[in-house]
Image (cartoon, rainbow, N blue to C red; front, side):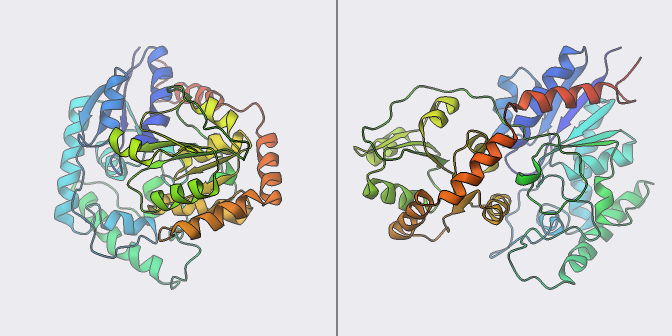
Length: 400
């Protein structure tokens, strides 16, 4: 008998989550189940999910801006600025997710960075499977670990942060007759958890004995391109053109004369044309990732969606992080000697110095080659097939 399955995401732009959801959803549909998705209507993933042919429901989301200078140090901080600061705010979000559940009537929910959807499922008694990378699924310790292990944060801060958000959550749960959480880690106690990551690319170091499914990222697709002429090492840049160090990096690469292909999001074709140089080809369209990785020597990017394919292709990474989840990945790469980072305030000379250092870093190249060898033959399909097979055997989906 066909079961109804809801995939849910609420935080961020939901693009990374859609890369994990879509292939799993396709496998569940192929097995005869009905699938729909709930995401906030204004996120970048919504048109992607609709284009894939899925029914997309509008999910509630908190849209107030964080206070000036806000820095998240733990998952509790993320919750506090996304609607968990007061009972009234969280109550409104829970009512919105309750409405989604009423519309979808799911037998099971797959939650990807959707904490309020998970709480609504607790109240409604709907089974939940969590799915996501390390950022979406922090190690369930008490308290939840630091998102900034490179920074000095007072030890009592993490319990204090959870002490502000946990009473708000529990007040809402008690009002609905649901069991309160003993700790924030209990939020992640679900029927099953699919951690779509490699241990080396887990946002959190030292997770311990965890069942890693493997990194899941979008399949290679995109338009063709030509490399600029030149015998020097080639660089592929994939990042948002509005990101602060973008122009500094491009200026450094042009100054060094390195043949560079740029896949820039968030800028117009006219802006891309103005950035073009003899050694610098700038595109706003998505490029054929397999082709560009096969032809480059270094990858400069922002997030895990390009980091994983680059390392699997044995290409060292130059990371230019912006939000906290990207900074966490840079920290993990740097700790393991798999790449270098450019700080957000770098000028052209500073960016150029980091590029030259990476070009000369034979130890990093060797470690990246070892990483690629250790995962030789891996494709996201291996993780996806295993997740779908396991999911189909879950009590909520198995049998009739």
